[in-house]
Image (cartoon, rainbow, N blue to C red; front, side, top):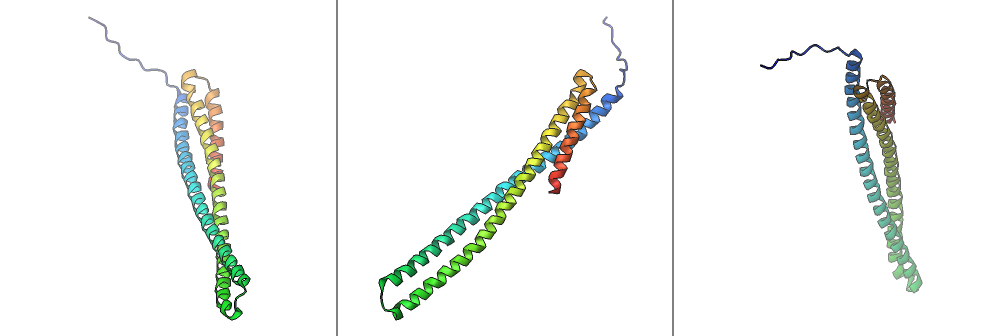
Length: 173
């Protein structure tokens, strides 16, 4: 009959438990930074799309302004009766001024959207850097379980701390 082995209690690695808990905490911070990074990249794309829409609208207004200006030039160039041309000139000049004013407002809105895009991209970059350092910290800390060297979690915790600071910085700007 074969012998049945009774498992013996293994030595408890207190430092290993601390490393395991820290890996879990780093993972939580990593997930927050990753989600924030993805959301900020999405926001940047949305802002850029809105800016592009505003620039297209601006371009359309500028084309209409130019067409009204060409119309004024044509009416003046034809040399017809000034009394007959006056209403057309007045209408075309009014349209031109309206398009000019509209284009200025649209340009302002488009520039604001461009600024929002740049701001979101800057935040996303910081979240990405934080995410990278957190991943590095997670991997380095986990290497303790293979090598049993305290250097790995020490460097891992430093990398994770840098990642947390970068992600926190992104939240503040």
